[in-house]
Structure formats: C-alpha cells, structure tokens
Image (cartoon, rainbow, N blue to C red; front, side):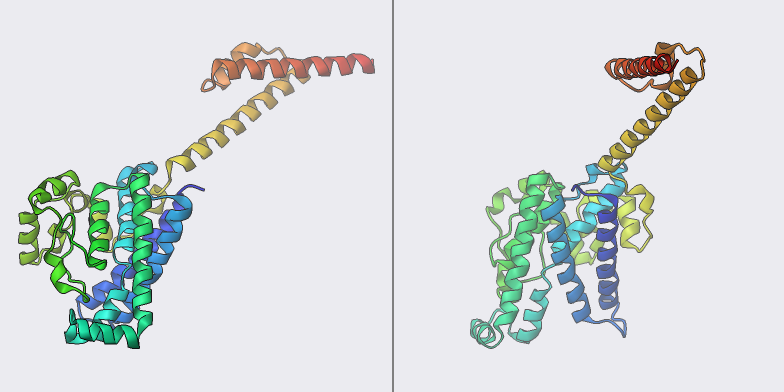
Length: 309
C-alpha cells in the first residue's frame, strides 16, 4: 500500500510530540524531561522505519498539495534525523569524559545495552537513507541524514551539516571528505555555502541552519511554530485517483440505469447522444462499449417480453 493521508497525519502527529518535548528542553521548562524526549525520538525512528519499509518515502510530490506534502516529508525527515537519541544516553553516562577511550571502554563493558541500542538506531537510519535515495527524497534531507550517520559512525562528513559532536569521538565533527569539493557538494544538495552555515551557527540562528527550501516554506515554518495542519490538504494523488475512478463508476452506473429505465417504460432514447452527453469524460471505446451493453440488454428484455406474450 502506498503512502496515504492517514499515514501522513500520523507522521505529523508523532513529530509534533517530539517538537513539543524538545521545546520544553530548549526553554528549560520545569517539566522538561530529556529522557521523555529521547523516548519519543526513539519511538518515532522505529515508526518511520516501519512506514518507509512498507509504504515508501513520503515524497512531497505524492500529495495533491505539494506544499503541504513538503511539510509531511519534512516531518518524516525529522523522525529519521533525531532518531539516534541513544547518543544522548551515552553522553550522559560518560559525563565530562566524552572522547576518553579508557572511559568509553569501561562504559562498553559495564553498560553494553547502551551501545547495542545506539547501533540499532544507526542501522534504522541507514535503512531509511537507502529508501530515501531509491524513492527520490529531497536532496537536502538526504544530505543531512548522510552526515548524521557519518557522525554516528565516527566517520568524516560529506556536507558538514552536523555540528553537535559524537560523544564517542568529538574531534571527528570537524572532519570532512575531500574538503576542496565541499561547497560543490553542498550546492548540489540545495544547501547554503558552508560559510553561511557557520555564520548562522555563530549567530545562534536555528532557522538559517536549515536548507533554504525548508526555511522558505511558510507551511513548514508554521508547522515548526506549532500551527495546526489542515488534514484535508493531505490527500495523496493515489487517493484522489481512486476517488475519481469510483465517482466515474457511480456516475456511469446511474446513467445506464436511467437509460434502461426509460427504455423499459417505452420511452424514446437517442442512445449515442445520451451516452455522449452523460459520459463526456469517457473514451470513445468506453462509450461504444456501454452503448453495446445497453443495446444487448434492451434486446434481451424485448425477447423476454415477446416470449411472455
């Protein structure tokens, strides 16, 4: 089954929960709970991995309203991007000793479940990234997830989008593959120049850290700010096609029933003209097929009436 409006609603609802929990953390609210935020992120990653495996990536162009489709795709991306919340558990367990190989080894021995959970997060992110590439997800989303996985794998980034260090290898955050081609790669993926990215980071401008196509979308901005999404605008093209085909079937059935009723009552019907009028959206071959069917039905009815007499 393909992505549909019900799946889209659930993606938005789940990401909304994460946004609310993260907002409390950033605002240092009294009821802010980092463990609750981490749990929501973890559940969202499991959810979105299952969705994309079974239904594909929710690309914006799958929706009738592509601007709203971009909001759904953005929310799905955030579920993948923030799904590695087990990193936070590792960081909290290490405390000030991030990057200390001796402390990391001791933690691996004493709490192996933390590292198993983190590995599972990364594998799910990798699964999602594979499907994102196959299904043609937005390039900027692919760039961010690619770098996120590289950070989690303690490898150099391709686009240098990630700035929060991996607690197991904090120095790796500055490493990049083929730095001379960095700006070219960023441009290809729809990202600002790295210099602009750095300036946004220094200014603490979270909005400018995101790709231009995201921060330039008023629907995404409204969603980020807590606006309620009009779920009636989440209809996919596939759903619209199914509805249209069903509507056509009902209309044609009603047309045929009406014609047969008139004929049965002895009324005169210009069959070809009636079908041409009432089935204007149908192909010529379909019109001929319906006309032939009605004529055959009429002949059977006349034969039965003749036999009864």
